[in-house]
Image (cartoon, rainbow, N blue to C red; front, side):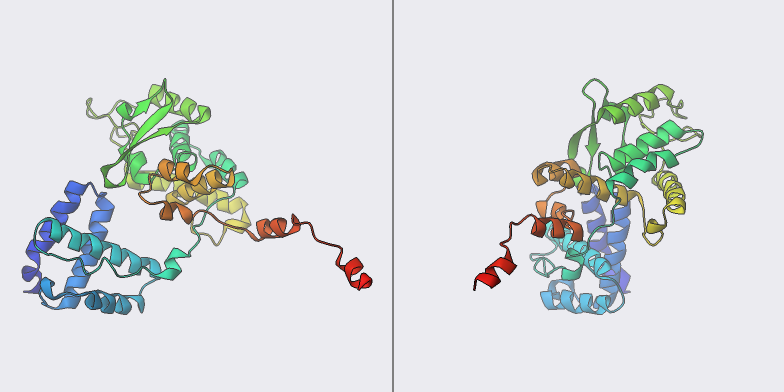
Length: 306
């Protein structure tokens, strides 16, 4: 009965996300989050939902979930009510003014130091080694999301300009330059590309069955690489490494090399520079170096003079 009551707004939300170009995984997660919220409402009409309703729900969620999961719920609800407004099924967005979890904002992304990042290429093996190395390089040295690698087409790659054009979040196109080493691997992959099952398939990365390499297959390639990397580096044992951690590593590497944060924002395809700011890690050693660089007076001499 409750599901029937909210059937129209849920359908509208799904249509809105499809038009907006949300990734399939995001659409599934957001619909699940919205359904959980609607179950919490227990039949209350959406026009009666206030900011307090959203906060009460999220407080309840926080008792069971992490701050990251809570913020994902909030993001889903903000998008949900924005969709209803766009389709004239609501006039206000009660989730818009609800604050994110501060703990989540202060969380430092997990990433690999430059030395370890450079070693990752040595742990890519197998029959499709060059294809898989190219995939690794696109995430580790171009900052691509796994979904962006999955969606990459031949027409998105310009060998002469050494660039790729990536369809990112919100269906935004972003041209990314390739380092010479990365461009060399992309050329090889194109030369060795398996004949696709459907001749008209434009997918850049093809599986052994002749189909576009799936997100799960890409994740498996990187997961196996991390497994071997961890086996030889004890300091990584407790870290949850994944495809997205390569993206974190890329952003951190750029900022460590004094690349303007606005440029990093564009390379990462972020809509807000606030998102890019989470990669500005400050290490204890960097703090010590900063303090040590200050010229101090000879305190013992000053004390003796007094």
